[in-house]
Image (cartoon, rainbow, N blue to C red):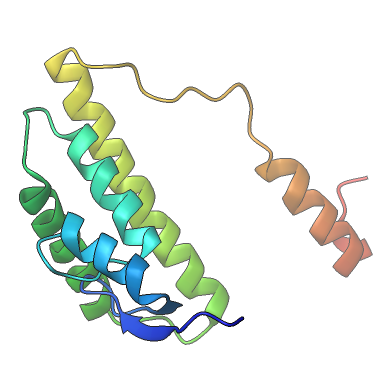
Length: 136
C-alpha cells in the first residue's frame, strides 16, 4: 500500500521535499504553521543553541531566514566549485563568529581540530592531475 505524498516547499530556503500529509502537519505544528525542511530545522536548532541568550524558536527561525536570504542574494560564482567554496566560507564565518561570542560569554568550548587534511588532499589531487606539479 502506497502512502499519499505531497510536495512541500521550505519556508526558509525554498527547497522542496515529498512528504506524507501527517509528517507535514507535525512539522508545521512545530514551526508556527510553516513548512521547514529537515536541513533548515537542524539549522534553526543550531541557531537556538548558539545564541548567547535564550531565544524563541520564532527568533531562531527569523535569524535563519535572514541568513538564507542573504546567501541567496549573493551572486553565485560561475564555476560550481567556486560556489561550494563560497558557501563553505560563509558557513565557517558564522561558526567563527559564534565561537567568538561563546568565548566572550563563557559558554561551551568551540570545536578543536588536531591537524588539517587539506595539504594531503591537495597534494593527492595535484599529483594525479599534474605529475610535473609534484614537490618530489
